[in-house]
Image (cartoon, rainbow, N blue to C red; front, side, top):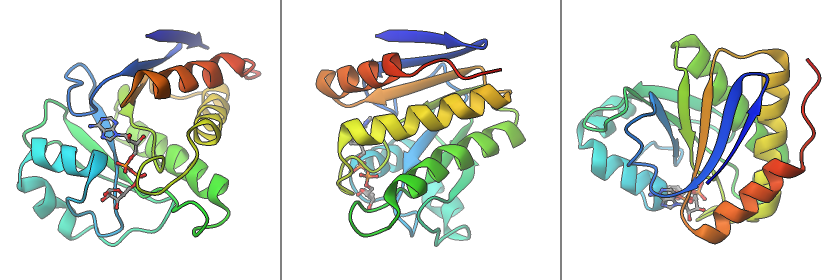
Length: 181
Ligand code: AR6
């Protein structure tokens, strides 16, 4: 695990399962447009949360690439789930702007709901095909910008499926300069 403190905000990268983060107030789902179960992160979150999550999602769907919506956590140990639709790489263009919008919109929802700790998966890097390193750069540069502007979110965790993905994120996080205050 690696960790960085930036203007009082902790950002860390861990290898693990997004559904096993009981100390986080909210987790982020790499959702599909219909906010249905699906595979990857979405499948794991819906399985762990139980059918109540799909029921809660029903009236919020469909969502567009870059958009984020929020629900309760149902049977998850987290109070909230923030569902983001990442861009399909090579289809939803410009992909970097759509991916950045996911992170911006997720943080905005967290702020609105008083969420101080939030765990993200690497949105779009699975079924949607976004290259891991490029996605990590977009994620961290967007978050560092938001932190530079001031955010009430105090703890951001990236939960990566493999050690390799974690180390790609560690390098991307370490490479960025601190934002200006
Ligand atoms: N915890 C943390 N990371 C995970 C987990 C997990 N339990 N499972 C997979 N990953 P993906 P996307 C990693 O495909 O690319 C779904 O079918 C995975 O290795 O979940 O945004 C939805 O229904 C990868 O690095 O999300 C959508 O249709 C990253 O999480 C579509 O896939 C994201 O992989 C969304 O595609």
